[in-house]
Every structure is written in C-alpha cells, then in structure tokens.
Image (cartoon, rainbow, N blue to C red; front, side, top):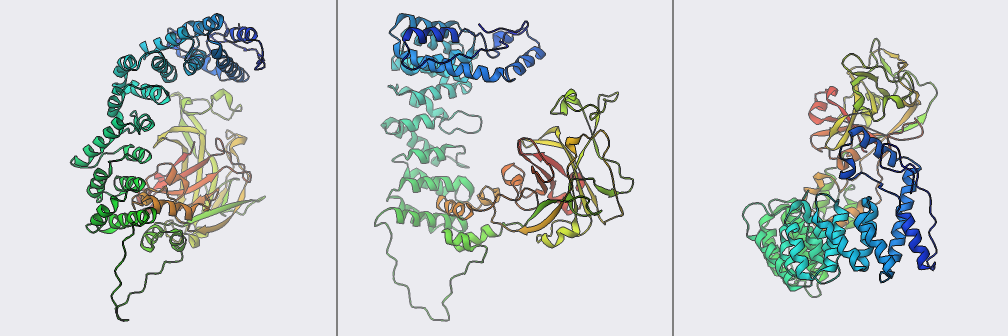
Length: 625
C-alpha cells in the first residue's frame, strides 16, 4: 500500500504499476488488480472529513493536486479502470467475482469504487457485485452524482422493470435526485417500465437549475406513449394563458420531431408572435423541422394576420418549407400589368449589407443587422525604446500630471489570488492596523484622445484629453455578472495637461512592469456577432441565423488590444449592451509582455450614462477567466 502522511488519510506517493498485455493470464491480471486497488482513499468523503478542521481539508486537497502525486493518482485510476473492464468479462470466475464485489462493498475511495461499479454495471455481472452497487441508492445524500447514478443503473440491470420503477420512481420525483435517475435511464439499454415516462413528464421543460427529461424521452421517441405524452404537453402550453412556456423544451422538441405536434405548435407561434425572440422563433423552427405539408396552409393563413418581423419570419419559414417539400409551392398568379410610373424598383442593399443578402437574408433584415454595427478602434503595439512624453502607448512608465500619486488599492490577503508569501520579497507591503494591504496597481496604457478621435466614428469618446489605465489582475475584488472584477483605476484629463513621467514604487514587482510599446491606430466596422442580445431580439428564424453565421464565419475575432465596438467583453461576458460600453480591451501579448491568466484578456468598461457625462470614476475592469 502507498505510504500515507502522518496526519492525513492520503498517500504521499503512488508507485507506478505496469499494465499487463491483454493476453496475460487471468491470474496475473487479477493479482495486479488487487495490488492496484490497495491504495486507500484518494479524495475527501464526508466520513473522512468528519471532525477535520478547514485547514486540514485544504491541506489534503492541496496535496492531492500537487505534482507528481496528481499524475500518479490519475495513472493508477486509469489502470484500475482498464483492469476492471477486463475482469468483468470473466465474472463467472469466483475469485474475480469476489475481488470486484469486495471493492464495491468495502473500498474507502469513492472514485475507485465508482470505476469498478461502472464496469460491473456495463457487463451486468457478477451478480453479487451488481447487487452491492444497487445498494448505493439507499444513501442518496452520501454519494455524489456519478456513483449514485451508477447504483441506479445497477438497479435497472438487476431488477425487473416494474421493481426498478418501484425503487427509483420516488427519487425521480425529487428535484435534487431526479437528474441522477434520468441519467441512469438515458444510459440504460434494456427494457423500461412505462411508468418512468409519465414520471419524467415533471421535468420535460427543464430550465436553469432543473433536471431535463427530454434526452431520456428522445431515446424512446418512437414509443406511442412517449409521443402521446409530448403532444399532451405541447397542447397544454398552447392552451395556457399568458406568456408561453420558457425553458429548453422547444429546443429539445426540435430534436425529437414528435408526430401530431403540429396543430399545437402553430397555436403557440400565433400566440407568441408579438413577444419575438426565442418564444416565437424556436417553436416556428420546430414546425420547419417537422417538414409536414399540413403546416403550409396553416402558416399561410397565419402570415396574413401578422406584421413586422413576425410576418417576415413566418414568410421565411413558408419559403423554406416550400423548398423542402416537393410540390408544396403555390403557383403565383400572373402579375397585373403596371405602368412605368407605378413600378417600384427593388430596394438595393447597402454595401455593408451585401454579404448578408448574398448569404440569403432579405434586404430589410440585413439592413436591420447592419444598423447595429459599431466601430471598433484597433490598437496594434510595436516596441519602442523611450517613447515621447504624452503619446498613446502601452506599458512603460506613465506620463501623468505633476504631483499625481501612484494608484494603489486597499485590499485584504483574501483578495489576492496568491498567498503573500508567494510574492517576491518586498513587493507586498505589510498590512496596516486594520489588516489592509496597500497594493500598487500596474500601469497598462495611456490614450491620447486626439489620436483616437478620427477613428471614433460613433463619437462616443471625448475628442480631446487623456485616459490612463491601471489594474492588478491578481487582486480580485469580487464578481460582476459571474466575472472576476479586478482592482483597477481609469484616470481622465479633460485637457492634455503638462505631463511628467513617473516611476513606479519599489513595491511594484518586475512582473507588474511592462515594456513600452507605441501604437498603430486603425478602425473597422465589422458585422455584429450573432451572439449579441440585440441580434437575438430581431427574432431570426433558423434559416436566417444560418445565413447570418455563414456571412460572418470568416470574420476576425478582433484585435488583441482595442477600444469601443461590440467587443468580446460585451457579447460573451454578459455585459448589458445598451447600458455599458467597452473602453479598452488589453490582451496577452509578447510585445509589451502582458500575460493575464491563461492567455486571457482584461476589459475596462464604463456605464454608458457615465461615459456620456465623462465620468470615468464609474469605470471597472473584469477578466474573462
């Protein structure tokens, strides 16, 4: 058995064991399996953690995540998994059956027990081990998701369908355990008691934090009782008052393609047309996926009652079905002869909209997308020895108004990503009487707004003046919409004052001092990303979304450093598009030596209202990691 620490239940070393060849004698494989599992626990369990201090638990986790032990543990688990899968094919051998059953019943390591349990459940043997694994479901609060789910699969393999339903159905009714039962049902390839389908109906809509049963139901979508269940659920939504059902149901329904769902789906589309967004477009796309000729007369009748984007979306769906279903197109009556004076020429697409029109979008829809475009100012760095005072640049030493103090942040040790002892000596000041650390910020960039003004075609920034950007990525002051909000400061001078080059304090370590780089400034006005909330509000149907994505598939991902525009910060990081504006994106690059996290970027943002008032004290900084 591997050597253990004196005060922790985990090994300090897990020796490497060589896997035998596939054709090795069964006795040799069994002997190695017994040796491999003789390793003790490899992670905390409730029983092991009972009575332990928080520091003990943290030390244990740190030990298990430290190289080379972490890699040794992974190698041992891989070997055990491989040997267990080999041995279950010889489950009729009494010694093999006993060894597998003993691990499932007695082993203190949850991960080893789970791996062996999965091998036993997949093979369906040996019977004693299968029954031992099935007993795990008796303690749902004790075991994690994967081990308990393996136990539920063991129940499905070892019991009759009716008995399995009697055992598992009570757990399926509980939110905290339903996803485990549904996972087990989804992985089970044997016979299923029909009562499971009705019990799964409770979770058919899914939603954030809720179990989802549609993956399980989709696996049995050809069964009449499942089809009838789903149709009833769609009809229930169609008959409901108020806003149509939210959640993932429609999206999952598109994969199942339930016969008989068409009438209710048309009702839902008609009722939700005024809502726009996915309430309307996803059920409409579900109708398209059915490719049912019966949908066409119903949609043609519906489109005559609609206006605006809803009318355009339904018309596009009709056109798509007419292309998909042979002979479905309605012959158009010959147009009435029009006089030259009354003839209206087709609207030509603007140059910016042409790529979208060529990809298949209607001119009107393409122009609405183009109207959402924003200019992005790209800032390409180039190393420079000693930059002139007051110029736009990254890194180096800042040029600030005389007597400006170097920016600091007051924080506590818990705000630091690293421990104080892990910083170079002298770079983190001692805490004051209140336990606060006075940590200097790193200088990242200064922007001469006169340089940016010719490129700011949306006129968002001040025309003149200076902006300075400071941050300390390893000082995390909390979260903002699930992002790390890091210590930062943006300084603004309305008019370019007399500037003095200021050296950083001695407590700013070398890793927080970056090489000076001059900047080449250009600007672009790319098509907005399909991920924008503003784009989703246009309620594009699937064919339009596909055309849009095709038109933007070769678009650049944006410069490493940029200002303004629909930057990645806004459409991937959850920053409200209308309420906040990106000031500056600073990415990791070798020119200035910026390196944030795992090749991450940081984003200085400001509320739109504050930007309009030139109030940069409201600016903040987040990191996409």
